[in-house]
Length: 171
Image 1: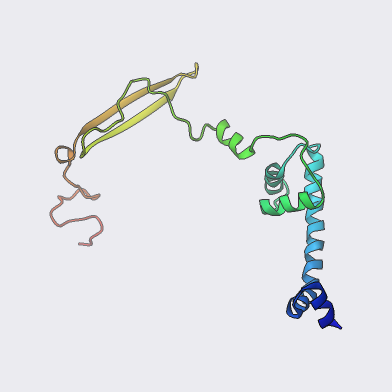
Image 2 (image 1 turned 30 degrees about the horizontal axis):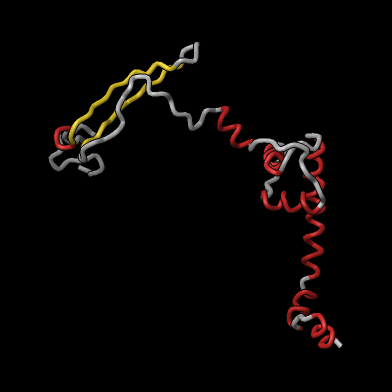
């Protein structure tokens, strides 16, 4: 009988028995999804339905101390038909912009950063002081030249002459 039904459905018997054997795993996954849905729904309702997957993930990690994969959150939201009412920007991107993490300052001193000849290097220390008027004042010290001219003699940490004595050697 099983062979006939499998042939009728164009399914191999081995696949049918594997599907039958995996039923407890599917039931267990459904149970876990329902528990996770309760958490996701709670966060979703707190934000009045205006939070998407990334927002929900951040709130779960920070407030509920629950780590959940973003794909799992999206899968559960799709499964239980939860959709955010408005499209909001990525909260991680907003946080990076607020802290000005990858900000590039304008070239106030009109420095030339292009290297036209090989072997030329430029070392700079830039100290930026933020003034109350949100302008940046750049104090710059630079040393530019060819590698062969700018090499300094090596010194050890202990202050010995560099002839055979190094800080990591024992005496």
